[in-house]
Length: 191
Image 1 (tube, helix red, strand yellow):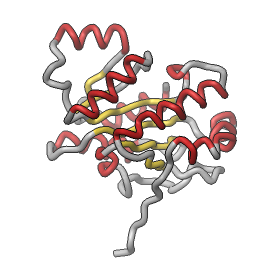
Image 2: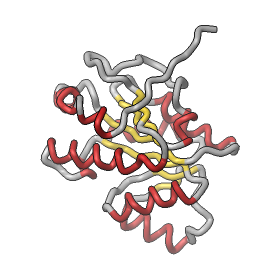
Image 3: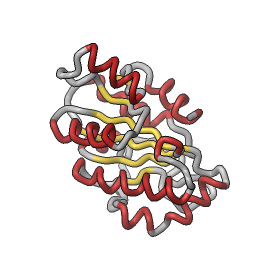
Image 4: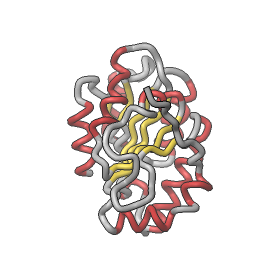
């Protein structure tokens, strides 16, 4: 079997150094969606949702990975290694959970360049939670007003039905259905 390699080091500075290329790819329609898949990993079979989600995304979607959940995605996507008509890799590893700040920084700078809010970007988020770091990332995103986040493979135990309803109503938070990765990918591409 041929050796597989993974490009890493796509933190804020690396991504922003090619921001012009990213913006042009968005404007030209070559890059239709940025999808952040990150968070914690675990042994539950339902976590294969995140692999299936990445595999269901078309070549016009860039996948940003973050945290241990990235190992559900790295070297497991199908399709092209780069966004069509660009030199931009389809999978960009942004680091560990503590690098979430870098991903938020990229999103806010892209929003500024496109003269829109973060929630108006062609950006979808799918967070795999297991421990406190992923919960801290989620709470930080909610504090920043980011909406439409998918979490899974189930809701954190401390999220009561009333809390979940408030998060759904205020932030359009969704708990993933382990069998709906393909449908979620299609919905993300329509966003």
